[in-house]
Image 1: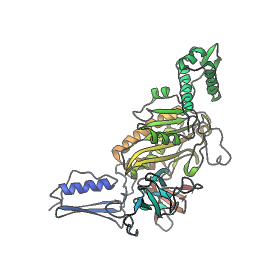
Image 2: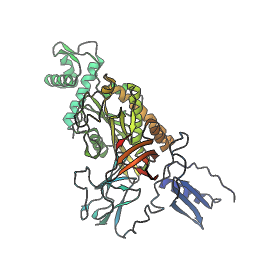
Image 3: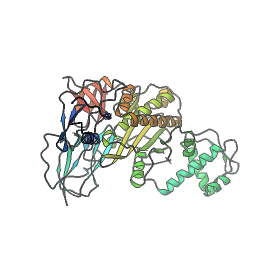
Image 4: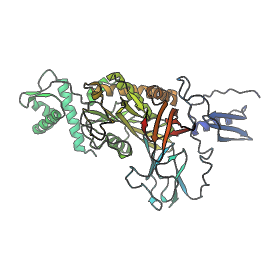
Length: 178
Length: 334
Protein backbone atom coordinates (compact mmCIF):
# COMPACT_ATOMS: atom_id res chain seq x y z
CA UNK A 1 0.00 0.00 0.00
CA UNK A 2 1.32 3.45 -0.88
CA UNK A 3 1.50 6.42 1.44
CA UNK A 4 -1.85 7.52 2.72
CA UNK A 5 -2.48 11.17 3.36
CA UNK A 6 -4.84 12.06 6.11
CA UNK A 7 -6.29 15.43 6.90
CA UNK A 8 -4.45 16.01 10.13
CA UNK A 9 -1.84 18.63 10.90
CA UNK A 10 0.63 17.66 13.55
CA UNK A 11 1.00 20.20 16.30
CA UNK A 12 4.45 21.53 17.07
CA UNK A 13 4.10 20.25 20.60
CA UNK A 14 2.93 16.68 20.94
CA UNK A 15 1.34 15.89 24.20
CA UNK A 16 -0.64 12.98 25.48
CA UNK A 17 -3.86 14.36 24.00
CA UNK A 18 -2.25 14.57 20.57
CA UNK A 19 -1.12 10.97 20.77
CA UNK A 20 -4.60 9.89 21.81
CA UNK A 21 -5.88 11.79 18.79
CA UNK A 22 -3.45 9.92 16.54
CA UNK A 23 -4.64 6.62 17.98
CA UNK A 24 -8.22 7.65 17.24
CA UNK A 25 -7.25 8.49 13.66
CA UNK A 26 -5.55 5.13 13.11
CA UNK A 27 -8.47 3.30 14.71
CA UNK A 28 -10.97 5.08 12.50
CA UNK A 29 -9.07 4.77 9.25
CA UNK A 30 -9.36 1.22 7.88
CA UNK A 31 -6.72 1.87 5.23
CA UNK A 32 -4.07 2.70 7.84
CA UNK A 33 -2.12 -0.07 9.49
CA UNK A 34 0.66 1.87 11.08
CA UNK A 35 1.66 5.45 11.78
CA UNK A 36 5.05 6.61 12.93
CA UNK A 37 5.73 10.14 14.04
CA UNK A 38 8.95 11.68 15.21
CA UNK A 39 8.98 14.90 17.14
CA UNK A 40 12.03 16.36 18.83
CA UNK A 41 13.69 13.27 20.01
CA UNK A 42 10.61 11.16 20.67
CA UNK A 43 9.32 8.64 18.17
CA UNK A 44 5.74 7.44 18.49
CA UNK A 45 4.61 4.37 16.58
CA UNK A 46 0.95 3.45 16.41
CA UNK A 47 0.15 0.04 14.94
CA UNK A 48 -3.06 -1.79 14.21
CA UNK A 49 -3.08 -5.22 15.80
CA UNK A 50 -6.21 -7.16 14.91
CA UNK A 51 -9.11 -5.15 16.17
CA UNK A 52 -7.10 -3.05 18.60
CA UNK A 53 -4.56 -0.26 18.14
CA UNK A 54 -1.31 -0.14 20.07
CA UNK A 55 0.90 2.84 20.70
CA UNK A 56 4.56 2.90 21.70
CA UNK A 57 6.97 5.76 22.26
CA UNK A 58 10.75 5.73 22.41
CA UNK A 59 13.46 8.35 22.58
CA UNK A 60 15.34 8.91 19.35
CA UNK A 61 19.12 8.92 19.43
CA UNK A 62 19.76 12.18 17.61
CA UNK A 63 17.47 15.18 17.89
CA UNK A 64 16.39 16.93 14.70
CA UNK A 65 19.11 19.10 13.25
CA UNK A 66 16.94 22.15 12.67
CA UNK A 67 17.50 25.08 14.98
CA UNK A 68 14.29 25.18 16.98
CA UNK A 69 13.86 28.92 16.85
CA UNK A 70 15.77 30.16 13.83
CA UNK A 71 12.94 30.23 11.35
CA UNK A 72 9.85 32.27 12.06
CA UNK A 73 7.77 30.24 9.63
CA UNK A 74 8.58 26.87 11.08
CA UNK A 75 6.98 26.20 14.41
CA UNK A 76 9.65 25.74 17.01
CA UNK A 77 10.13 22.10 17.71
CA UNK A 78 8.66 21.15 20.99
CA UNK A 79 10.06 18.09 22.63
CA UNK A 80 6.87 16.42 23.62
CA UNK A 81 6.75 15.56 27.25
CA UNK A 82 7.15 11.80 27.07
CA UNK A 83 3.55 10.64 27.21
CA UNK A 84 3.18 9.11 30.62
CA UNK A 85 0.50 6.62 29.74
CA UNK A 86 2.38 5.36 26.71
CA UNK A 87 5.95 5.09 27.93
CA UNK A 88 7.23 5.32 31.47
CA UNK A 89 9.20 8.54 31.86
CA UNK A 90 12.27 6.95 33.34
CA UNK A 91 13.62 3.51 32.52
CA UNK A 92 15.40 3.43 35.84
CA UNK A 93 12.28 3.91 37.95
CA UNK A 94 11.40 0.80 39.95
CA UNK A 95 7.96 -0.64 39.36
CA UNK A 96 5.14 0.98 41.23
CA UNK A 97 4.16 -0.72 44.43
CA UNK A 98 0.52 -1.74 44.36
CA UNK A 99 -1.59 0.06 46.89
CA UNK A 100 0.47 3.25 46.91
CA UNK A 101 -0.61 6.52 45.30
CA UNK A 102 2.13 8.38 43.44
CA UNK A 103 2.41 12.14 43.03
CA UNK A 104 4.12 12.87 39.71
CA UNK A 105 5.40 16.06 38.12
CA UNK A 106 3.09 17.58 35.50
CA UNK A 107 5.94 19.62 34.07
CA UNK A 108 9.70 19.74 33.48
CA UNK A 109 11.27 21.93 36.13
CA UNK A 110 12.93 22.21 39.52
CA UNK A 111 11.58 20.51 42.63
CA UNK A 112 11.19 22.54 45.82
CA UNK A 113 10.14 20.91 49.06
CA UNK A 114 9.45 24.21 50.85
CA UNK A 115 7.81 27.52 49.90
CA UNK A 116 11.11 29.42 50.31
CA UNK A 117 14.71 28.32 50.99
CA UNK A 118 14.60 28.95 54.74
CA UNK A 119 11.09 27.63 55.32
CA UNK A 120 10.15 24.17 56.58
CA UNK A 121 9.30 21.50 54.00
CA UNK A 122 5.65 21.20 53.02
CA UNK A 123 5.74 17.50 53.96
CA UNK A 124 8.20 14.89 55.19
CA UNK A 125 8.18 11.10 55.37
CA UNK A 126 5.71 9.97 57.98
CA UNK A 127 3.48 13.02 57.64
CA UNK A 128 -0.21 12.57 57.05
CA UNK A 129 -1.65 14.56 54.18
CA UNK A 130 -5.17 15.17 52.96
CA UNK A 131 -6.04 15.03 49.30
CA UNK A 132 -5.44 18.51 47.89
CA UNK A 133 -2.73 19.50 50.39
CA UNK A 134 0.28 21.17 48.81
CA UNK A 135 3.24 18.80 48.92
CA UNK A 136 5.86 20.67 46.85
CA UNK A 137 6.46 23.29 44.19
CA UNK A 138 7.80 22.66 40.70
CA UNK A 139 9.29 25.72 39.05
CA UNK A 140 9.86 26.23 35.35
CA UNK A 141 10.89 29.63 33.98
CA UNK A 142 9.71 31.40 37.15
CA UNK A 143 6.31 29.78 36.89
CA UNK A 144 5.58 28.27 40.28
CA UNK A 145 3.38 25.22 40.22
CA UNK A 146 2.09 24.06 43.59
CA UNK A 147 1.59 20.31 43.50
CA UNK A 148 -1.20 18.77 45.54
CA UNK A 149 -1.49 15.36 47.13
CA UNK A 150 -3.57 13.09 44.93
CA UNK A 151 -4.77 11.02 47.84
CA UNK A 152 -5.17 11.26 51.59
CA UNK A 153 -2.72 9.20 53.56
CA UNK A 154 0.84 8.90 54.81
CA UNK A 155 3.89 10.10 52.88
CA UNK A 156 6.08 6.99 52.62
CA UNK A 157 8.66 8.07 50.03
CA UNK A 158 10.21 11.23 48.68
CA UNK A 159 11.92 10.39 45.39
CA UNK A 160 13.65 13.66 44.54
CA UNK A 161 16.04 15.89 46.45
CA UNK A 162 15.23 19.51 47.07
CA UNK A 163 16.35 21.89 44.29
CA UNK A 164 16.87 19.07 41.81
CA UNK A 165 15.48 19.00 38.28
CA UNK A 166 12.53 16.73 37.53
CA UNK A 167 11.18 15.38 34.28
CA UNK A 168 7.61 15.35 33.07
CA UNK A 169 5.81 12.46 34.74
CA UNK A 170 8.62 11.76 37.24
CA UNK A 171 7.53 10.40 40.59
CA UNK A 172 7.86 12.86 43.45
CA UNK A 173 6.14 11.25 46.41
CA UNK A 174 4.48 7.98 47.33
CA UNK A 175 1.44 8.11 49.58
CA UNK A 176 -0.02 5.15 51.45
CA UNK A 177 -3.74 5.91 51.27
CA UNK A 178 -5.76 5.81 54.45
CA UNK B 1 -4.60 40.51 53.41
CA UNK B 2 -6.67 43.50 52.38
CA UNK B 3 -9.62 44.22 54.61
CA UNK B 4 -13.09 45.03 53.32
CA UNK B 5 -12.75 48.51 54.82
CA UNK B 6 -9.48 49.08 52.95
CA UNK B 7 -11.11 47.94 49.69
CA UNK B 8 -13.93 50.41 50.36
CA UNK B 9 -11.38 53.19 50.86
CA UNK B 10 -9.62 52.17 47.61
CA UNK B 11 -12.90 52.55 45.74
CA UNK B 12 -13.61 55.93 47.37
CA UNK B 13 -10.15 57.21 46.46
CA UNK B 14 -10.71 56.08 42.87
CA UNK B 15 -14.05 57.91 42.86
CA UNK B 16 -12.53 61.13 44.19
CA UNK B 17 -9.90 61.05 41.44
CA UNK B 18 -12.47 60.16 38.81
CA UNK B 19 -14.70 63.03 39.91
CA UNK B 20 -11.88 65.56 40.03
CA UNK B 21 -10.57 64.40 36.64
CA UNK B 22 -13.98 64.69 35.02
CA UNK B 23 -14.45 68.20 36.49
CA UNK B 24 -11.02 69.64 35.99
CA UNK B 25 -12.10 73.13 34.91
CA UNK B 26 -14.09 74.03 38.02
CA UNK B 27 -13.45 73.69 41.73
CA UNK B 28 -15.56 70.89 43.21
CA UNK B 29 -17.05 71.60 46.62
CA UNK B 30 -15.88 69.26 49.37
CA UNK B 31 -19.43 69.10 50.62
CA UNK B 32 -20.71 67.82 47.29
CA UNK B 33 -17.88 65.29 47.01
CA UNK B 34 -18.61 63.94 50.48
CA UNK B 35 -22.32 63.75 49.74
CA UNK B 36 -21.85 61.97 46.38
CA UNK B 37 -19.55 59.42 47.96
CA UNK B 38 -21.72 58.99 51.03
CA UNK B 39 -18.89 59.74 53.47
CA UNK B 40 -18.43 62.26 56.26
CA UNK B 41 -16.67 65.58 55.65
CA UNK B 42 -13.72 64.67 57.82
CA UNK B 43 -13.27 61.37 56.00
CA UNK B 44 -13.44 63.22 52.71
CA UNK B 45 -10.65 65.60 53.81
CA UNK B 46 -8.50 62.72 55.01
CA UNK B 47 -8.79 61.16 51.56
CA UNK B 48 -7.75 64.42 49.88
CA UNK B 49 -4.75 64.53 52.22
CA UNK B 50 -3.85 60.96 51.42
CA UNK B 51 -3.97 61.64 47.68
CA UNK B 52 -1.82 64.74 48.16
CA UNK B 53 0.62 62.60 50.13
CA UNK B 54 0.89 60.37 47.07
CA UNK B 55 1.90 63.36 44.98
CA UNK B 56 -1.48 64.10 43.42
CA UNK B 57 -1.68 67.88 42.91
CA UNK B 58 -5.01 68.97 44.33
CA UNK B 59 -5.49 72.69 44.91
CA UNK B 60 -8.07 74.26 47.19
CA UNK B 61 -9.64 74.11 50.62
CA UNK B 62 -12.79 72.45 51.93
CA UNK B 63 -14.92 75.61 51.58
CA UNK B 64 -13.52 77.00 48.32
CA UNK B 65 -13.64 73.67 46.57
CA UNK B 66 -11.00 71.27 45.21
CA UNK B 67 -9.40 71.24 41.82
CA UNK B 68 -6.95 68.90 40.14
CA UNK B 69 -3.95 70.83 38.80
CA UNK B 70 -2.50 68.03 36.71
CA UNK B 71 -3.69 64.58 35.63
CA UNK B 72 -2.14 62.20 38.16
CA UNK B 73 -0.33 59.01 37.14
CA UNK B 74 -2.69 56.95 39.26
CA UNK B 75 -4.44 53.98 37.72
CA UNK B 76 -8.11 54.87 38.15
CA UNK B 77 -10.03 51.88 36.70
CA UNK B 78 -12.81 53.89 35.01
CA UNK B 79 -10.28 56.17 33.33
CA UNK B 80 -7.99 53.31 32.33
CA UNK B 81 -10.88 51.34 30.85
CA UNK B 82 -11.79 54.24 28.54
CA UNK B 83 -8.33 54.08 27.00
CA UNK B 84 -7.82 50.31 26.82
CA UNK B 85 -7.17 48.91 23.36
CA UNK B 86 -7.89 45.32 24.41
CA UNK B 87 -10.87 42.99 24.32
CA UNK B 88 -10.14 41.02 27.49
CA UNK B 89 -6.85 41.98 29.16
CA UNK B 90 -7.52 44.57 31.87
CA UNK B 91 -11.28 44.71 31.34
CA UNK B 92 -11.81 43.64 34.95
CA UNK B 93 -9.61 45.75 37.23
CA UNK B 94 -8.85 45.51 40.93
CA UNK B 95 -7.03 48.73 41.83
CA UNK B 96 -5.43 48.79 45.27
CA UNK B 97 -3.73 51.71 46.94
CA UNK B 98 -1.82 49.39 49.22
CA UNK B 99 -1.61 45.59 49.22
CA UNK B 100 0.71 42.90 50.56
CA UNK B 101 1.46 41.75 47.02
CA UNK B 102 -0.61 41.76 43.84
CA UNK B 103 0.29 38.09 43.29
CA UNK B 104 -1.01 37.17 46.73
CA UNK B 105 -4.18 39.19 46.10
CA UNK B 106 -4.70 37.51 42.71
CA UNK B 107 -4.16 34.06 44.21
CA UNK B 108 -6.83 34.80 46.80
CA UNK B 109 -9.09 35.93 43.95
CA UNK B 110 -8.67 32.73 41.95
CA UNK B 111 -9.06 30.48 44.97
CA UNK B 112 -12.22 32.17 46.18
CA UNK B 113 -13.99 33.53 43.13
CA UNK B 114 -13.90 32.95 39.43
CA UNK B 115 -12.22 36.06 37.99
CA UNK B 116 -12.61 36.37 34.22
CA UNK B 117 -9.70 35.79 31.84
CA UNK B 118 -7.67 38.98 31.63
CA UNK B 119 -8.46 40.26 35.13
CA UNK B 120 -5.87 42.84 36.22
CA UNK B 121 -4.76 43.45 39.80
CA UNK B 122 -2.72 46.62 40.06
CA UNK B 123 -1.43 48.40 43.16
CA UNK B 124 0.08 51.78 43.94
CA UNK B 125 2.15 50.21 46.72
CA UNK B 126 3.10 46.70 47.86
CA UNK B 127 4.09 46.11 51.47
CA UNK B 128 5.39 42.61 50.78
CA UNK B 129 6.23 42.61 47.07
CA UNK B 130 7.98 39.37 46.34
CA UNK B 131 10.29 37.72 43.90
CA UNK B 132 11.53 34.22 43.35
CA UNK B 133 12.62 32.10 46.34
CA UNK B 134 11.06 34.46 48.85
CA UNK B 135 13.09 37.45 47.66
CA UNK B 136 11.76 40.96 48.11
CA UNK B 137 10.58 43.26 45.32
CA UNK B 138 11.12 46.95 46.10
CA UNK B 139 7.74 48.62 45.64
CA UNK B 140 8.03 52.34 46.36
CA UNK B 141 4.57 53.95 46.40
CA UNK B 142 3.49 55.23 43.01
CA UNK B 143 6.93 54.72 41.48
CA UNK B 144 6.48 51.41 39.74
CA UNK B 145 3.94 49.27 38.02
CA UNK B 146 3.03 46.49 40.42
CA UNK B 147 0.53 44.23 38.77
CA UNK B 148 -0.75 40.72 38.29
CA UNK B 149 -2.70 39.53 35.28
CA UNK B 150 -4.97 36.50 35.60
CA UNK B 151 -5.07 34.41 32.44
CA UNK B 152 -7.16 31.33 31.88
CA UNK B 153 -5.78 29.73 28.73
CA UNK B 154 -7.11 26.39 27.58
CA UNK B 155 -3.70 24.79 27.19
CA UNK B 156 -1.92 21.80 28.72
CA UNK B 157 0.17 22.46 31.83
CA UNK B 158 3.34 21.67 29.89
CA UNK B 159 2.85 24.83 27.80
CA UNK B 160 2.08 27.15 30.70
CA UNK B 161 5.67 28.42 31.17
CA UNK B 162 5.46 30.00 27.72
CA UNK B 163 3.15 32.60 29.27
CA UNK B 164 5.97 33.91 31.46
CA UNK B 165 8.25 34.31 28.44
CA UNK B 166 5.41 35.93 26.51
CA UNK B 167 4.82 38.45 29.29
CA UNK B 168 8.51 39.39 29.22
CA UNK B 169 8.50 39.82 25.44
CA UNK B 170 5.40 42.04 25.62
CA UNK B 171 6.80 44.19 28.45
CA UNK B 172 10.08 44.48 26.54
CA UNK B 173 8.29 45.73 23.44
CA UNK B 174 6.11 48.20 25.36
CA UNK B 175 8.93 49.72 27.38
CA UNK B 176 11.02 50.21 24.25
CA UNK B 177 8.07 51.83 22.47
CA UNK B 178 7.08 54.16 25.32
CA UNK B 179 10.56 55.20 26.47
CA UNK B 180 12.81 54.71 23.43
CA UNK B 181 15.23 52.75 25.63
CA UNK B 182 17.11 49.69 24.42
CA UNK B 183 15.78 46.82 26.55
CA UNK B 184 17.17 43.29 26.76
CA UNK B 185 15.53 40.11 28.07
CA UNK B 186 17.67 37.99 30.40
CA UNK B 187 16.56 34.39 30.53
CA UNK B 188 13.91 33.62 31.38
CA UNK B 189 12.02 36.86 31.92
CA UNK B 190 14.04 39.65 33.53
CA UNK B 191 14.21 42.91 31.61
CA UNK B 192 17.52 44.76 31.61
CA UNK B 193 18.54 48.23 30.59
CA UNK B 194 22.29 48.75 30.40
CA UNK B 195 22.75 45.40 32.16
CA UNK B 196 20.60 46.36 35.14
CA UNK B 197 17.18 45.04 35.98
CA UNK B 198 14.09 47.19 35.34
CA UNK B 199 11.46 44.50 35.45
CA UNK B 200 10.87 41.08 36.97
CA UNK B 201 8.16 38.51 36.48
CA UNK B 202 6.92 35.81 38.84
CA UNK B 203 3.99 33.56 37.99
CA UNK B 204 1.90 30.92 39.68
CA UNK B 205 -0.01 28.17 38.02
CA UNK B 206 -3.36 26.86 39.21
CA UNK B 207 -4.15 23.53 37.56
CA UNK B 208 -6.81 20.89 37.52
CA UNK B 209 -5.67 17.46 36.41
CA UNK B 210 -3.57 18.14 33.32
CA UNK B 211 -5.24 21.40 32.30
CA UNK B 212 -4.46 24.96 33.27
CA UNK B 213 -7.18 26.47 35.40
CA UNK B 214 -5.51 29.86 35.67
CA UNK B 215 -2.10 31.49 35.58
CA UNK B 216 -1.37 34.55 37.70
CA UNK B 217 1.36 36.56 36.02
CA UNK B 218 3.01 39.01 38.40
CA UNK B 219 5.02 41.81 36.84
CA UNK B 220 6.98 44.56 38.51
CA UNK B 221 8.38 47.42 36.41
CA UNK B 222 10.59 50.09 37.93
CA UNK B 223 9.23 53.19 36.24
CA UNK B 224 9.93 56.35 38.26
CA UNK B 225 12.13 55.06 41.07
CA UNK B 226 14.91 57.57 41.73
CA UNK B 227 17.03 55.32 43.93
CA UNK B 228 17.33 51.79 45.30
CA UNK B 229 18.61 50.34 48.55
CA UNK B 230 22.40 49.90 48.58
CA UNK B 231 22.28 46.12 48.32
CA UNK B 232 20.49 46.14 44.96
CA UNK B 233 21.58 49.54 43.60
CA UNK B 234 24.37 47.99 41.48
CA UNK B 235 21.96 45.59 39.76
CA UNK B 236 18.69 47.56 39.61
CA UNK B 237 17.57 50.58 37.65
CA UNK B 238 14.39 52.35 36.59
CA UNK B 239 13.10 53.77 33.33
CA UNK B 240 13.37 57.25 34.81
CA UNK B 241 16.97 56.79 35.96
CA UNK B 242 17.88 55.61 32.46
CA UNK B 243 16.15 58.36 30.47
CA UNK B 244 16.45 61.20 32.95
CA UNK B 245 12.74 62.00 32.82
CA UNK B 246 9.53 60.78 34.40
CA UNK B 247 7.37 58.28 32.53
CA UNK B 248 3.66 57.62 32.65
CA UNK B 249 2.91 54.28 34.29
CA UNK B 250 -0.47 54.42 32.60
CA UNK B 251 1.06 54.61 29.10
CA UNK B 252 3.35 51.65 29.83
CA UNK B 253 0.43 49.66 31.24
CA UNK B 254 -1.91 50.42 28.31
CA UNK B 255 0.72 49.46 25.77
CA UNK B 256 1.69 46.32 27.68
CA UNK B 257 -1.89 45.04 27.92
CA UNK B 258 -2.48 45.57 24.18
CA UNK B 259 0.85 44.03 23.19
CA UNK B 260 0.50 41.01 25.45
CA UNK B 261 -3.08 40.35 24.36
CA UNK B 262 -1.99 40.38 20.71
CA UNK B 263 0.95 38.01 21.35
CA UNK B 264 -1.30 35.76 23.41
CA UNK B 265 -3.78 35.51 20.52
CA UNK B 266 -0.96 34.70 18.11
CA UNK B 267 0.28 31.99 20.48
CA UNK B 268 -3.15 30.35 20.70
CA UNK B 269 -3.37 30.33 16.91
CA UNK B 270 0.23 29.50 16.10
CA UNK B 271 1.60 27.43 18.96
CA UNK B 272 4.73 27.61 21.12
CA UNK B 273 6.98 28.69 18.25
CA UNK B 274 5.30 32.09 18.20
CA UNK B 275 6.42 32.89 21.75
CA UNK B 276 9.81 31.23 21.46
CA UNK B 277 10.61 33.07 18.24
CA UNK B 278 9.48 36.40 19.68
CA UNK B 279 11.62 35.80 22.77
CA UNK B 280 14.61 34.90 20.60
CA UNK B 281 14.25 38.14 18.65
CA UNK B 282 13.97 40.20 21.84
CA UNK B 283 16.84 38.67 23.81
CA UNK B 284 20.59 38.88 23.33
CA UNK B 285 20.78 35.81 25.59
CA UNK B 286 19.20 33.48 23.03
CA UNK B 287 22.30 32.20 21.30
CA UNK B 288 26.07 32.37 21.46
CA UNK B 289 26.08 34.16 24.81
CA UNK B 290 28.68 32.90 27.28
CA UNK B 291 27.20 32.67 30.75
CA UNK B 292 26.77 30.77 34.00
CA UNK B 293 23.45 29.58 35.35
CA UNK B 294 22.96 28.40 38.90
CA UNK B 295 19.86 26.29 39.30
CA UNK B 296 19.92 25.61 43.02
CA UNK B 297 22.29 22.66 43.23
CA UNK B 298 24.62 22.98 40.25
CA UNK B 299 26.25 25.66 38.11
CA UNK B 300 26.28 25.24 34.34
CA UNK B 301 28.73 27.18 32.18
CA UNK B 302 28.77 27.52 28.46
CA UNK B 303 27.36 29.32 25.47
CA UNK B 304 23.63 29.64 24.91
CA UNK B 305 22.18 27.60 22.09
CA UNK B 306 18.54 28.62 21.71
CA UNK B 307 15.42 27.64 23.60
CA UNK B 308 13.95 24.24 24.27
CA UNK B 309 10.16 24.15 24.60
CA UNK B 310 8.49 25.34 26.67
CA UNK B 311 11.23 27.90 27.28
CA UNK B 312 14.22 26.05 28.74
CA UNK B 313 17.63 27.53 27.96
CA UNK B 314 20.00 25.30 25.99
CA UNK B 315 23.61 25.72 27.10
CA UNK B 316 26.47 24.20 25.12
CA UNK B 317 29.23 23.30 27.56
CA UNK B 318 32.97 23.21 26.93
CA UNK B 319 32.88 19.48 26.10
CA UNK B 320 30.25 20.11 23.42
CA UNK B 321 27.36 18.59 25.33
CA UNK B 322 24.14 20.55 25.70
CA UNK B 323 22.38 21.01 29.04
CA UNK B 324 18.88 22.45 29.24
CA UNK B 325 17.98 24.51 32.29
CA UNK B 326 14.38 25.13 33.26
CA UNK B 327 14.89 27.25 36.33
CA UNK B 328 17.63 29.17 38.03
CA UNK B 329 19.52 32.41 37.91
CA UNK B 330 21.86 33.57 35.20
CA UNK B 331 24.60 34.57 37.64
CA UNK B 332 27.16 35.95 35.24
CA UNK B 333 27.40 36.69 31.57
CA UNK B 334 29.79 38.25 29.08
